[in-house]
Image (tube, rainbow, N blue to C red; front, side, top):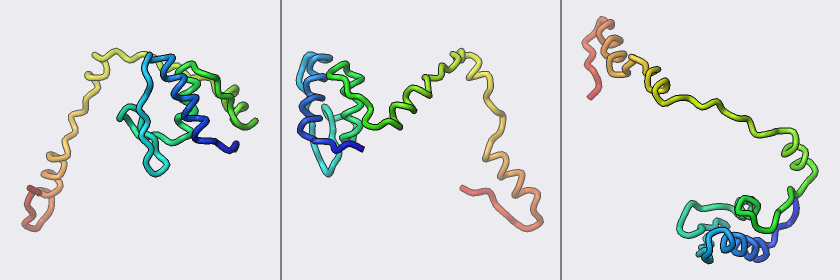
Length: 114
């Protein structure tokens, strides 16, 4: 893995972000994690990946193994599932009813949980 210079990566990310969004990002660093515009905390490597996504200076994969995996695994397309079908496959299983049946089947005096 190549050694990452945080100042260099942050500068490249700022450039790419500014080109994509038209404004400079606010980057907060705390314990090795970086928050961009108050969003999700990211590691330095994730910021480096975002540079390529934003269309800034292209960051090439650091090792030959990463290049091979990037070439070998094309993005798999997921078939679009209509929302009507997704809702139609709801199960009639209920955890509450299951436990009620289990407790009723026992010999002793069991009660349902609260």
